[in-house]
Image (cartoon, rainbow over all chains, first blue to last red):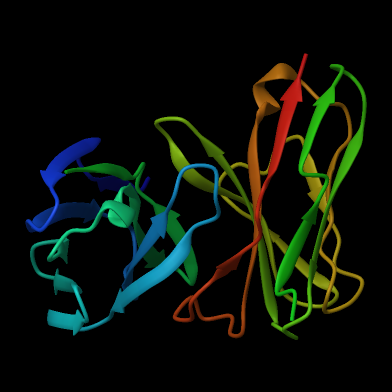
Length: 108
Length: 114
């Protein structure tokens, strides 16, 4: 089976940095996605890592270590609008397997 | 451009009844997917289609069927609904079929089976 783990909840202060970790054990691996999902809305794409290393996109960065089965999403300069669930998803055999998601609450 | 739409937005259904959830995309994407999202379990793939005329089973296909008569439409049918099928259902599409492409999600259908 597929095993993708993320923390259930995280809380941080506006302007701070938060790191959301994702560990995975899957039968195959072709890449790892991060999606953002606001409450009651559809998931939207944030990033996709295929190779090891850090990919930066504005305030958001994503890191991948394939040998460790590990990724993280780094959110910098947190804003209230960043309060959402963040979903880690592994491209496994050309289909996505999702983690349960991490709910981030940003407080003033 | 509408992107990807789903209907209905929400539905309450009696157990044993059948229902079809509709999904339409106007991006000419090859691949389409149906997921269910349950609290604490995340998104789980029900069925997928890599191109018109072909479909495949995902992680939780039992009790569901799909068809892909054309590129744009990918309906999901529950033949005889059961309470465990209460969930939020998301349709998604992507331009490619390798899994390396971003998936675009519809707004979801909230289904309650009583």
